[in-house]
Structures are given as structure tokens and as C-alpha cells.
Amino acid sequence: MAQNNPLQQYFRQPAIYIRLPSNGNFYPDGALDMPPNGEIPVFPMTAIDEISYRTPDALFNGAATVDVIRSCVPNIRDPWAMPAMDLDTVLVSIRIATYGHSMDIDTRCPACKEESATGVDLRILLEMIRTPDYQTPIRYRDLEIYFKPMNYKLLDENNKKQFEEQRILQSLNDPDQSEEVKIESLNRALKQITQITIEALSHSIAVIKTPSAMVTESGFIIDFLKNCDRDLFTSIRDQIVKQKSTAEIQPIKLKCRSCSHEYEQGITLNMPNFFAPAS
Image (cartoon, rainbow, N blue to C red; front, top):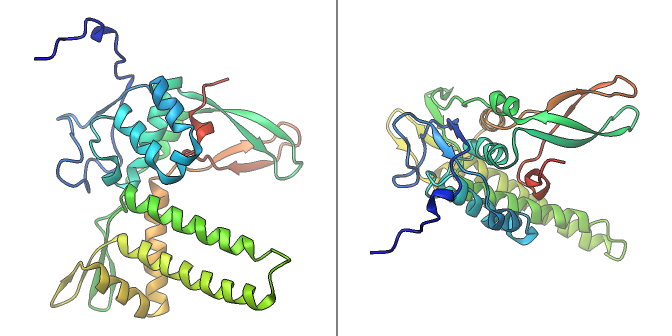
């Protein structure tokens, strides 16, 4: 039997407790240890967590995010399987547990271009997050289309694919490339972007119910998205975008100190600066 560490009483303790937007739904068996009261403990980051999270290579493949969630929110046993709808709540909570609820963000007024630092209360951001409606289907003729959140693993893979395609599109500005090469690259990139979009949408569809079948197979759903009419495809896409945005941090409303112009400022969470100590 391992000897108890006499310093264990000085280990970090939970700093805050949170309720997940998913309410613990959509996790596969064994991926979440949900307390009876539904409140998940969140621990502050360790020094190792902070160093790991601020490593650019680790950030790109999502590994650092997963490691930090495992460390700070141990009740989420498999962060890769976490519904993406819980991501913003978890990251903001880790930031609060580690550095407190106050954070300064750099902002620039779109009217007068004045740059300034603005204090944000992260507790208010948490209160803005809502639980998306995954109970109400889209009905089309005799079809019922039900949705689900993408898990973090699929979200990370989709983000990497989009990043690579953006790099290809940016390379089209290279003056040394011929027009033929640019056109070929553009056509290839547009086809790939369409494929990425369809795959991402398919991962957010739980089941398509017909009068005679319950379709859950990914291949069948992808085939359906490629061949359904434009209006139905648009309705599906808009519903998924709406569900996704509901569980994300909303832009905050600001007023420029110099010209009094009112504008909205978005906040990006999955980045090193978000996990920097308060100034």
C-alpha cells in the first residue's frame, strides 16, 4: 500500500463549482463522474498546467486543452468525449478558479480606432451561456431531424481541417503562382471546404426519423445532406449554428471612452492569453 503524502492536506482544493450546460447529457458511459447535486468541482491550474497550455504546438492539436481539463475538472474523465456545448463554461471556470473572476481584454473601437483595456467580470459571461434545445426537431414533410452537440474531439479535428483550408486560400495571394495553379487550388479548396461543412453538420445530427426507419448511420446522413434540397439544407445548417452559439460566450457590449461609440467585442477562450494572470 502506498504511503500517504503528509503534504496532501496542502494540495489545491476546488475553487468553484459549476453546472454544465449539457446537464451531463451526451457524455458516453465512463466519460463523466456527475455528483448527485449536479455541481462539478473546478480546481485552479498548477504551474505545469499553465506552462503546458501556453505551448503553441499543444494548443493547435487540442492536447493541452484536454490535459488542463483533466487536471482542473477531474470529474470530466474523458475531455475528448465532452460535448462541445460545455467547452466555454469549463474554460471560463478554470480561468476563474485560477486567477479570479476579473479579466482585462484589449479592445479597439471600430469608429475612432482607439485601443484600450477593458475589465470583464467572467461570472457574467458564465451567466450568459444557455443550454441549447436539442429536444425539438426540424420537421420536413414526413421527416423529423433531431440534433446533438459535436464532441470536443470532432470539434478539434474540424477546426484543424478548416485551418488548413484557410492556409491554402491565403496561398492564392502568392504572386509567383500561375493563374492555372491558383484556379486549380481554389477549386480544390472550395470542394474540400464543402466536404468539411457537410461532415461537421452530419456529426451534429443525432437521428433522422422517417415513417419506416430511424437513420443514425453517418454515411447515410452525409449522403442525405449532399442530396437534399437547398432550403432544407439551409434550415439544418441554421439550426446547428443557433444551437452552437447558444452555449458559447456571447460578445460583450462596450462603449468607447473616447468617442462614445457603442460596439460589441467578441472573446476568444481557447488561446494562451486567456490563461494569463490578471494584470
